[in-house]
Length: 514
Image 1 (spheres, rainbow, N blue to C red):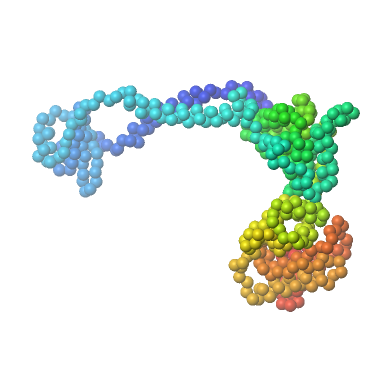
Image 2: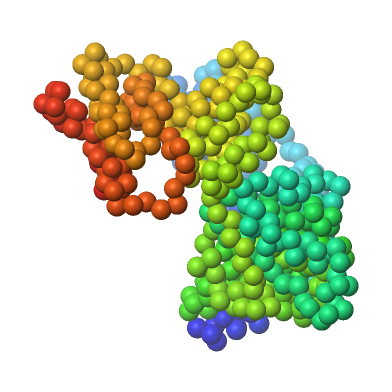
């Protein structure tokens, strides 16, 4: 296997004219052998006697003379056929044709323009194929570079200058611990001499770890904004290419550009795309990803002068990363961005609400308590949905009702206003939801019921009961867990007590309980 691979690598690539020659050969064969058969109609070879018999039977309709053959057309019962026969010296034939009323003519010898014929028959197809081939070749050279793999000037990293779309820590709320951890990076970029004097080295790479939507990309931009340095942003998937070596070339060019604008920050989003743990499969089908990862490790080792270049990377799956990426000298520092707590959600909502027109007495705390477990991206979406709802309702400010309705829309989907439920089904759904609420109300430590609705939603829910915690709990006791199970089972219990039946309305409750 290895020998075959080395033979393939050692084989020189064929010149583009090799492929042009194949195209010319195909055009030649097509014109000489296939085209005449396609264009010609089916002509039957007949004897001169057959021709005269058909003429006597008044079946011949048209005759065409040439110096070598006679072509004639017959029609019998509405069926037209084409024949040809040899030329016989018969001076009486024109007279016979006139008597029979047959149309006849003789070919006028023409001297064809040989050059024009060759140009149309061979030159035009070859010209078309050549132009298409040159276009494809030019595109490939543009992607691969004049040297075959170099992509200099073709970088895909987005560059944000300090004065363009500047972000700072004020734009990042709910992640105070992460901001404190990154403050040292900012100080190093602003005052590198202070660290050089004492002999300290700033971390080469910082890995931002957290669930989707927690603001890893925004945090990286904010670090660059606080340090007032250029910011290079690229996704890990942009390094992976079909041609082996292109990904590594992109890594080299990225760091070349970063070195020219140092001090700066290079941000690689979804680094797990190229940084997955290497295994035996790399030797066969993943050479491109392995070479890209190796080049990234080389750049981070400092073989190239990367002074003043800080690498930030983001992933929500740190467990799949190659150990070589996480060793000291590379991504030796990890900063976790967690889902925001109650205080963090309030701060995030305040940041996004600054950009919309809102009423003065907006209850942000209520919305924050309703959105336990929501990420920063989801909270931003809730604010945007609230603004859209305000416009739909004909208002120019966002109200608390808009925000709470947006929370319900994100959780359960929009209302199904055209859904039709029978009166019996409405009663079952109503008692089901009241069952949840009654059990919650009877408990001492259960979250208060905020809303009960039997309006169907696009998520499939025919109704739901919303509970909002007064305070956020970090620990759940055994008693709290049992109380939550009781609330989930309250709907099914109400159906059985009131209607003496069980429906599929409790399917989601049972799924959550188990």
